[in-house]
Image (cartoon, rainbow, N blue to C red):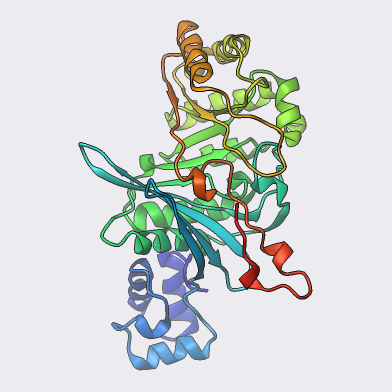
Length: 362
């Protein structure tokens, strides 16, 4: 697959494998950035070069739109069928405010997820495989095409999968989005529940992205009940790595906190969360806390907290000195496109006698 390769790789392909001039690799790269879906669409290449690519078994690597759903707020969820028949989801979230039009794409980084978070639909799928850099970038192309006339301004790695478990391809795709498509690094967010040793590895790349930590609990014991894999990565170690990340990159860390009624949304929880951040110095106190009222999923006994409860939690954090706090507005929840809701049920449909036409997505 060509999509996902950088300029250097494509120049090497053109020169060393295809016997062409080096600059042909850059031409291929420019076509890929335009979202072409076939070798024949690369019209600036000679017919001979296009034949060489096809004879060599090379393909662009675009996926197919299997289905799409649009919510009343304009949010659109796309199910994409990959070359091996696997299905991933991505979401386009338009924001039209007084200052500018924005289009955010929520991309998946894996097929399924191994983190098994109890409040997340994807976590109930299990893990199948990592996505390639090209398969990640392709999601951005599809959303931009779905919102014809709009340009993608923001990308969040908050879809299916744990990005830090696929760090190589996540970083490679970020470079294409940033340097190739011109999406500002500070408008790209990578979200993680925390995987040992990966935050420090990410810091070595010195990217100017936003790192968002899915915290969801103010102490280790509660966090382990919500995120089983947290047992291998204690809060103390996680926050120390966040401090290291801030010092290495100069970029403050953002913390995501899903509020679940009567589980982690009390005023005592808010005060404990503030103390947790305070205990790790000014670096963490300058972080942003994004509160996310839980979005309903199948097979979960949790409840969404009331708006009053959410606002009380936010006020308690601010009283304790956490100045940068916001509440995320749910987008696309009616079509299963909101935070924590991404999961497709195609595996059930693919049992003997079933087919893709049996698609059902919560």
